[in-house]
Length: 352
Ligand code: IPM
Ligand code: MN
Image (cartoon, rainbow, N blue to C red; front, side):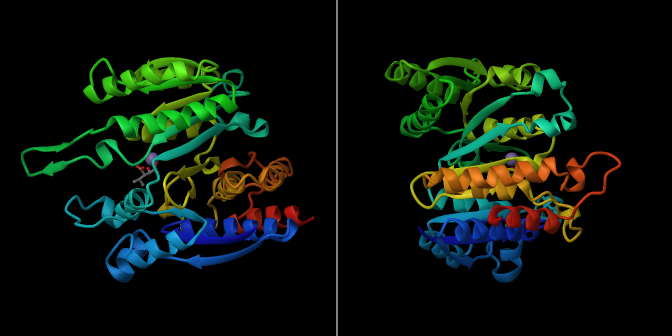
């Protein structure tokens, strides 16, 4: 294939891990006879500083030109501590999701056997845990009507039937390809929006008789993920709950630096690590590039290229086994490698 890729490195550690993702993508293309053209674009704080807009029109045009977007991270502390800031880096990410219609965010939670000891949970609970969280990404409180004055403020958790139905269908399709178990996570005992989710889910469940559907309140799901992560196969939930639960999920595997994600929908899909921009680490060469590299694997898999994806996953596993690891996942007493050393090792491995 002749790939057109939009690269959005963003802020903080974004540019460092972005480079590793791009180098791995290029290595896979050389090995499997694909060609690839990259176009770089600004987003987040970097774009605010340059042109005053966290998702400039030109970036949007480049995303639409591309077959896929390789996104890294946005966010900067100078905005976090300023509740009056009119424009924030995160708005760039949200604008990208909305404008590209990326309603389905696929976040797999997998474990690596050689890193199990890094998980704060007991080995027997975590070993073999493997589930996917499907997070609705363009609705709910993130995008509903907002109001704020100095006395009162609100965010509206608005969902419509078509929005709920389309994300549920994505989740059912994933469940059908996996262990055929779908957990619909909501707060239907309190929230009207959740009661509509549950109603729509109960209506369409009979169309997927091969899948077992269960319903779980989000508070209970948060607990169950820690007590028995192996219970889950595919979970589907609204935007805000999915944001929170996937950070929790990332801890299961031992480091936030390990988990990739794919956002898909109506237009160009986006592949990105689930972690943020970790500004304190920027320029220190300690960021783990694996989540970014594994999002390149998800990119190839999205285009049906299983061998390419598998080749990246194998090289990542080999790097872990060989102890070529950044500090967050290195075994105590062993020297840690830099972001660039890990990325280069994996890219070379792919071409061997
Ligand atoms: C994520 C991030 C974003 C979100 C932020 C940066 C806006 O936390 O992708 O999970 O809340 O969706
Ligand atoms: Mn998040």
